[in-house]
Length: 90
Image (cartoon, rainbow, N blue to C red; front, side, top):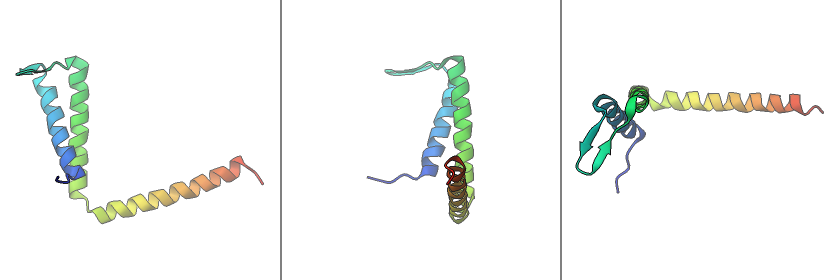
């Protein structure tokens, strides 16, 4: 079994959702896709977001993303501790 990366999943899902939003109503043997107006709009939005996420993850180095994630996690922990001290006074 092969391991697929997140960028590959985002690329494939973005392309599939964009094709659903463009084609709209279609039939392929036993499979019928009829998303309607809002379904096509939602597929378009999700497809574009998937492709933007793919572009960001494939261009940005992972070391920078790890550094940003750890600093964000530390800030959340610090603010959470301060918030709990305000809620529960000594």
